[in-house]
Length: 508
Image 1: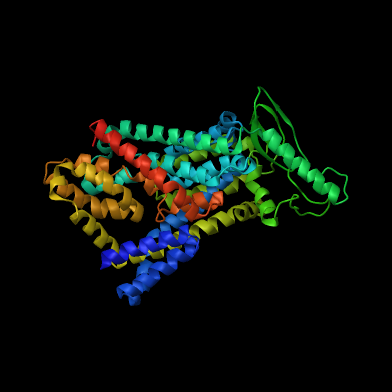
Image 2: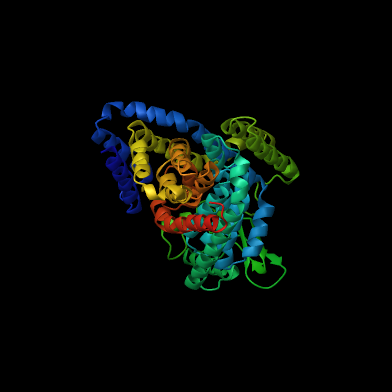
């Protein structure tokens, strides 16, 4: 009964959010509360929720201060050179932009933290996707899948959990898996190429300069309609070497870009002296508000928050932070808390400036932390009622006896649904030891089982139980249901490519 209710609860949650009948936060709270009553343990709901909140509180704290820290680093210009390099490659070609998204997400994933990866990737690529009217779910899908492959790094979490659960060396698990994971990463790049070609076919071969010129014309028309002869938007032109389209981001008072041609960024400011943004002709109020998102100013070389004299201090601070994370010198929430406080104090010594930076990132902090605590209700009920254990036992017991010698392949296949519907902790500490025991009875090495357990990570990174995915969809302003509908098939395909490669190379 618990097994049926567990699968029904998860299915209900996914269906409702994908059909947009409920918001993710509401679904994460109300659906498990309702099923907790169905199970007959409604009286214990409070205990389950408190336990879930207690488990995820460090994660919420880490995300809060990580958003502040990396938000400040983006504000002060630490990542501008990396972003410009990616944008130089992308130009204004939709195919290159999607491939660039995958490359950037894979590179930044080397720090082992999904939230960091998504914050940097979205901050860098969001302006291009918005300006060129590309699909934002393509961006979130590619970023999540690329990060899922890279999440298997020994300091990323799953490998360390597998090593701990089976008492193995993390290097012995990870190193032999490198060829299969490399093929998985190539598959993500190939996927991004195909999706990019689809975007190029949908939108045509674009010139960012033409897009921005169209925006400027619309602004001029709006200014004329308002009876003003003053040019509404201020602009800076950057003449760049080479032919082709330009790329970049800018704001009132400045612009930035890389690529070929002239790049002009204009921002509607409404009638002079009004102090408000006015929607362009043909736009709704909400659309204009979206187009004026502060992240469209991301590479403005004249933004007030830049701290070029502190560039090497910020680079060193970030390197020390990432090193301390990898070496586990302190708990990750504590490291981000200390780093965020230090970054704010050094870069913005005036208290009003610090408040302004905190306020600028408060929206993301609130959205993400709210999602995490709502997810605590979901995971708390799943664990507390015993549904997750019942589902795992049902799946393991359902494995035919004849599959015993192939338990590594079975583990790889099971890792897709199990790591999607369960937390990594639940899978690696609860299910993996059982699978390893079943494999050992048929002569299958625990190392093979451990390696196979990593296969499902590309899909796992888009699970509703992964806090980092809420950073991704929140910053990209993508509905979680839309992201889920788009990414599941591609992430599952990538996982199967990794599994197939592992079998082909004799790793699994």
